[in-house]
Image 1: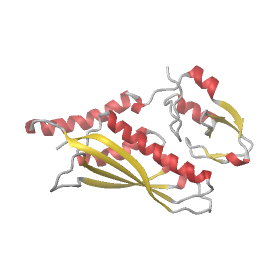
Image 2: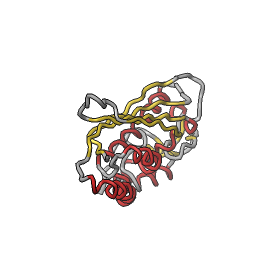
Image 3: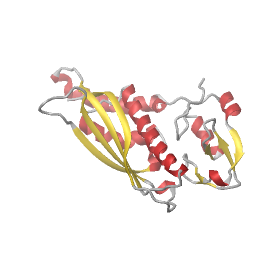
Image 4: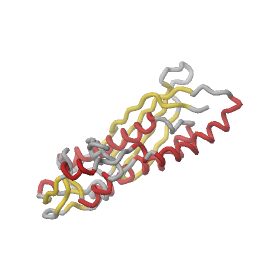
Length: 225
């Protein structure tokens, strides 16, 4: 049977904090996906669960995350062509980067971050004779739709980028990693700052905004065309 997502939420479950510096690019994400019925069923209250292990860098775009999640969700029979599924990807990315950024702001680091993504589903109405062909078609169409619509993203308006993205020099308190390429932002080097105050390598954020109007860390929205 195939299921459509009707609601979702993501949250960090467990974080082992310490002060010893760890490169951001080596942070492991332990992502547990819980799928359950939106309307409780007495004899089947829980539907399925999958756990995936990935590096933080794989959360840099919905496309990368979709490549990891799609085989597991296909096993569960989840429809991946809906706007709700795109929201799941963006929610996981926002939760992962937001949690890591919050830790770094407080001077903490971690080897692994456990994230939970809860998806609430309901069965899709269809004739049993069409089930096999419909599931096969949905999985194939899912990948094509994500590629055709740039994975739910729109490029930022170029004029707005020129006005709103500022060139700055990285200072001591801003030292860290560029969350696009995950390489270091060195003190004294030039970088680009978004209106939300997050900074990145100029070339990195320029290429990112050509594809997406969201800040890679906090999902601040830049104007679009």
